[in-house]
Image (cartoon, rainbow, N blue to C red; front, side, top):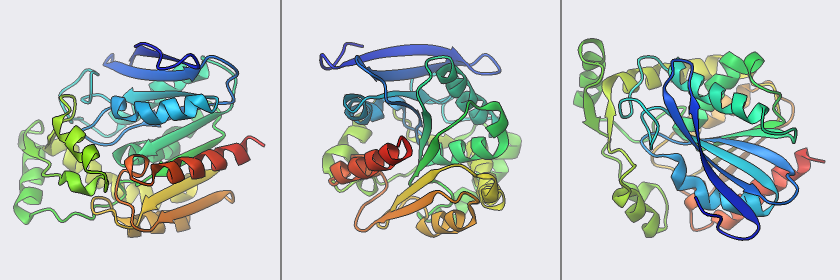
Length: 287
């Protein structure tokens, strides 16, 4: 990648997950002093490239950011939107933070959006002792439950095929208008060649199984945490987010609900306000 300005540097890195799967990481960092580092995990069927505008914004504020393409997403290896077990995503996330641990000493924060928020939270619950020390976590529009109603036939088919043909893929049927009030965001998503529009049956059953676990183990999340969700999110369930937040053990926790905002808070019409709130939260934890 080429730098977008004289103030930032961009690069693409290649990591390996525990089982050897190739993982792409996009990094955007300031040329000057690094105030903190941010490790980002994206949502289902998309990729880290969709976050570059946000990463550039935070690089201008002194944050060194890296976003991973999870296996089966973007330009990383693996069958598209498929895992044998959810722990493979946790392995990928652990690989990202192991890399970041060796890439500097500035405070390190973890950020996850949608499915990435579910992956990140399960990593915090299951692998916290194997991660580098984190100054905090940011959970955006988490996929702790579905708001969009799945047809019964699709749910039954997904569960059945997960046992006999786990790689069987079905359309996600995502309405891109639910991503953001900015129609250009939906159009770009639809036209993006690195966005998948199908998900496999094993991905489905593994994801659904995490919803109960993430609630049952919420008290294991004991670090500063910011949870944000748009109240007009028609994809992931705001009520599940509220339930999770109420169970978090951390004393330093904040739930910010955004009236009128849809699923992709950082791509919304009001993204400047969302970025400002996130930036202020980070600033406060940096003292």
